[in-house]
Length: 255
Image (cartoon, rainbow, N blue to C red):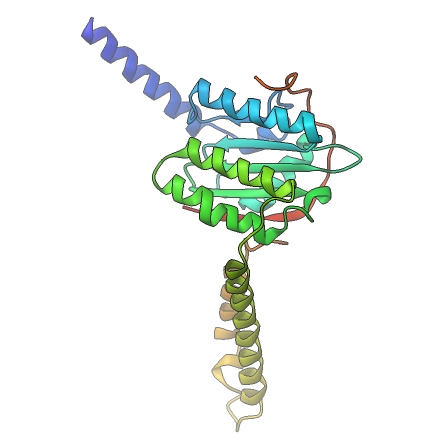
């Protein structure tokens, strides 16, 4: 009996591993889900998935704002923010008139996540608030492998933000603004060095202006700034997405 149990367990593990390795993110764009919580990794237990589904369906019923949770194994090299916008548009999360959809996408094996927001909720859930929810609520739980708690608390914070009851703390906003100012200052310094180097004696200008370090530094600085936004049984059951549209709002993170 123990041997049979061992063989069954090993077979189940192999099946799960194979299904995750063969997962194709592109095929997901063509699907029409029948629930708000879609776990393609088996991370959530059936009870956990149902508890999240009930909460999000109840919020959809009371406000018409749709929050979808999608857990996939990997993006296979795709940018998570770009893919989430494409997925959100393909599924049509949110209402067609109000565009009030939000999608929390988690690429588990990549250890990346993204919150995409429809046009209609960008005011209630601005990029800075999405980023704070990722950094201070979801990510700490994911680091401890408590995925359900991270998703549960993260979606609760999103719901509070849409209701006007939650926003990023002021010190967090100042920290992000300070980082933006530093980025602008660095750009100005680079431009100054390029201009002054070009006026140097002979030699065709400085190293910064000869195409060596300049593209690399600018590319690195711009790349590091991505993800900070702009570039997310109660009720009667989920009735399907309404054709909402997305414009690129939201935030990304990793753990």
